[in-house]
Figure 1 (cartoon, rainbow, N blue to C red):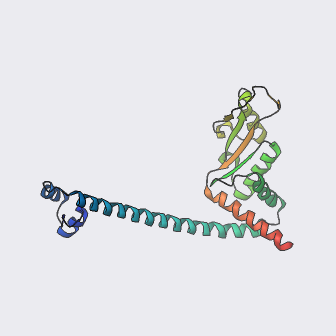
Figure 2: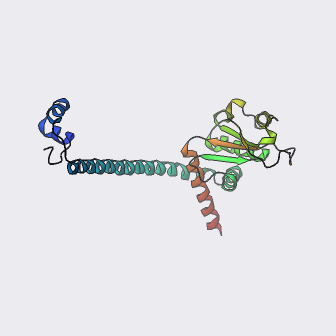
Figure 3: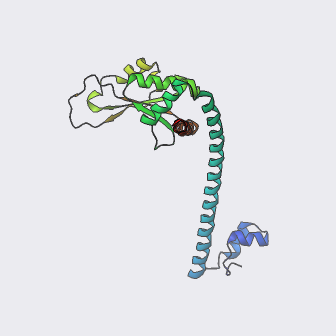
Length: 212
């Protein structure tokens, strides 16, 4: 059976013995190079098949989750579509939100815009400020100006919610914009929020297209 290219697993399925017994019986049975290559090709084929099966299963689960999210998003769009704040938030994210990641992320240096988006998140996602992650992006010359404290006070979010600030390299050490407070990123951890804002954006576009 071993000479025919059967693996230990195949042989064990036929003989119903322990693997240790099989190893003992076959320890003095060297395989030829052709037999080794054949067994390796079988293992590789099984691995590839397993990966394809796992990827297909994962994709199917993802599609099922997206169907549920889409159904919820559609019902909520009907409920909120005529609310000015709802439309404003969807449009703001369309303009300034992240599209390349798989999570909701909105970045801007305008304090009023950040506050509006936080208000929108509370109203339509039901998330309080304490549940939202924020990160400041600034430039090296501003590193000692405690910009995190400014933003924490401006948007009323605890400093504990701030992730480590990212300081970008600057060609000049001088401050060309003395009043600059950096860009703040609002980030939500769950994929459902990103999917919903995508669905709502498309629904809003279609809504206005139908109106001509």
